[in-house]
Length: 319
Image (cartoon, rainbow, N blue to C red; front, side, top):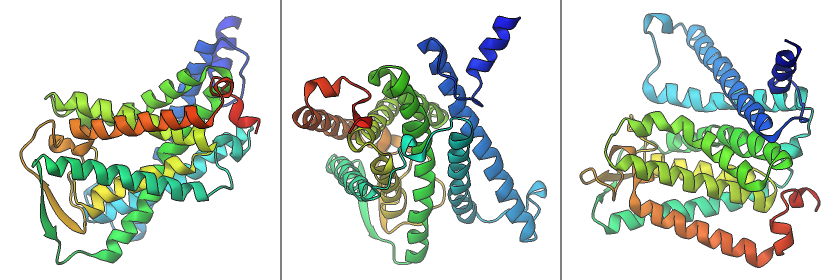
């Protein structure tokens, strides 16, 4: 019984114990990931419910805001989840925010915005060349202030995912395990929440959705490691979602709900070139673009970083 209690204490996300086999520590970090995620989502949902009640609506009886308003409320609500994640990090992991990847080098966010813009525009343009996405024109009644509001909403939505995957998971595991294992686990936990949307389509498109989500996660990890902060990954994640959803009006990770966009672009048929209902994130063309980007990232890292430093996962923390 004492061994069972000790095991439970070791695996508990409410302490910062590290003295255990690597496998157990990985399980502990995975549990911490879900603890942060579920805690944040539960409190976030509670806040959204309270806002409804405060505005005279009873969501328990189906009285809800319109879909766009609800989406914005949910996305801005991620700011609460980010705060909760940082609180858990400080109180239970007893680490500084810089150890989470939250550094003062906010300029890295702009780098992420630039990288993300290039990749998403290149991906969409490449798919357009195949004829499986058609450009119709500019929406005449596009609500630009609302589009801008969505950009700020995506800042919080994307940051929450990065705080968990490239922050909590990657930063903890890279201290206890090898860097490849840390990246692999953080990538698996990034892919997992997207699986329900992927599996709703049983065509070969699912495979490409899985490949692309893995590839983009690896690029997020590279940016985090390269700049020793999560800001670049946050920036790329934000602009990728925003441009797809609110600039080009395309499906985002299977989300084809009502949205506000600048350009009117539509898929022609459902195939592995345009990603079908899941969007270009399930496109074989996008996979080629992301693979090329990842190869370039790897080549640049080998060129700029001495070989002995590349294999040392603690290198970034010694500079």
